[in-house]
Image (cartoon, rainbow, N blue to C red; front, side):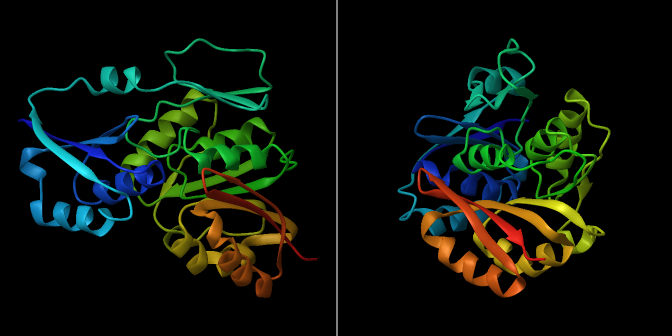
Length: 276
């Protein structure tokens, strides 16, 4: 069966958004490129109407241009290995794939084989979440990772000494990939499938991690607050710098105080603390 190939040129901040949107309509493999993303789907699974709708939705804002083609056979492991470089978050953590050599000079090291899941540390949101995790005491703490993707933030929590970690995602492929990455990094935790309401984690947690998107964060903020212990920490990312005010306004009435923020490539990340 042939694969259809779509070479999509877009603004960098829209890469993960487009990957998420296309994965919902049957695309099963992606490669990030310097210009944007290459997206692939089996010819038999392709829904032209749904695809055109996604492209039309983001075409202007993301400055999308598009080339279509057919690729008869693809060795996906070989393809993403060619396009996956290790990253370093300060001197805190070195994120690499299993085929990269180790670098013991870093405090921590995470092995992530991402396949099509989201969160390798390359994107500004994941990078900043890892950096913020390094600023929070995880030792002996109970941690919840909401929308885990590859599981990279849960792995970081494990390396920082968390005693109990719960993680879940709405995408079954992410759950499968996340559990593979947990195994690579020595976690016995199993990622669950579902939304936070479906999984229904039982609090209280010392730390809640949520790298998703603005609308989901606003919708679920009260759930995060209820799950947090007094003086617990909520780490958020997945939104633009100009969205900080809206998220802070949503969090304050719930007893969540903004104590730290950072921005990278116009993507923001926040640390909030629950009042006593």
